[in-house]
Length: 338
Image (cartoon, rainbow, N blue to C red; front, side, top):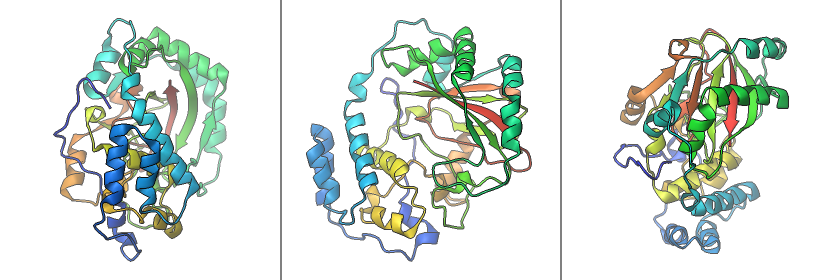
């Protein structure tokens, strides 16, 4: 989220997870008691964790240590996030200007050396048989070591990515490549269905999401041709600047990381909350096809295909989606700078 060029009139509201048709028979809180919500709102104003915990405990009688921990963590992180933004004395460049305005920047870089080095890992991933990965994992993913991260770091330094991303992030430091993973996506993949994993309904916006934690910048690096059939990465430009309700922001981030709502038991915990708190930053599946809210996002969605370049740098606080292949594979590096 940007604090220096925000957009308030974006027209998007997070849907209630319990409104998804496949879970309509499951119990949920339907009362109008706003006591807990009021406590949570006051806690955010005061940056008071104890008051925040009393607020959600007012509704959540079924305890879930992981979700409670995520709620507390997100509350603490975002209580101080805006105050922690500090400019970095770096000249502006195209990457910075693109990120500031649209949340994403497209580049065309020389990846020949990287492709040669990484080919054995690509071949290994392509040989993996189809399977159903558990929530939080991918069908075919390889964590890359320091050698590869160093190669990407040098590539990003030479192309101005590190400078532009660092200036945009306003974290008071120069960013570095902290993580790089190789992801091979295939039409048979299952990982993009993990939110509400046990449900059948699949919508066009499935897996559209906002990353729950900021203070990082990401990159998608294509190692082969990508078109509409290859599960291209897509982004809602300018959505990195959209401002949401503060209470929903905390709960949406926490539920995204603390619960995939992939079983009736996990949903029962979340469904104790009133509807305005039953939200997730992994919201895409909840937007039913041909509804006005979904159409509004699809009209703004921009696909990143090879004709635009082979690298995109993006703010993961904006809405994005990808890796859902139709008839072709997609081979890409996913890079995290922090």
